[in-house]
Image (tube, rainbow, N blue to C red; front, top):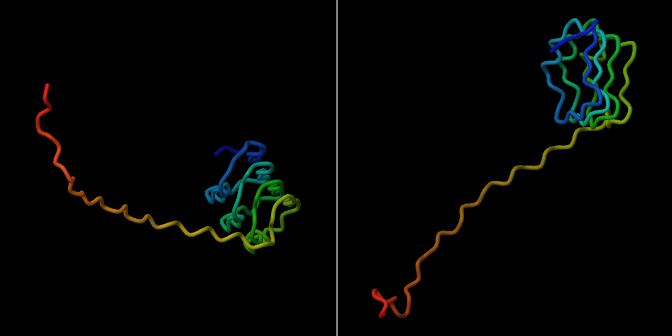
Length: 120
């Protein structure tokens, strides 16, 4: 992960899935820009370690849940979060279907056994 002048940008790159918690290790980040992707889930609590962050852009994603108290305590000057469902509970994932065993085939006896030799 690379910072350029304290800025980490992954904006408008069609990223999907949850926000990687490892981004919380970018402790020198001043600006974290993740807007206009397809990110889902909630903002990781690990972002509370980004003590120098003054700008956090996550608008236009599919984020949900509350902003973690660890992040709120940072006193971020600019937080852009529109176009998400932040403040609403994240949906509970659907339960995974348990695969059912296939029925075992029971050979049925043929009424007339097949010939062992075919006449020519």
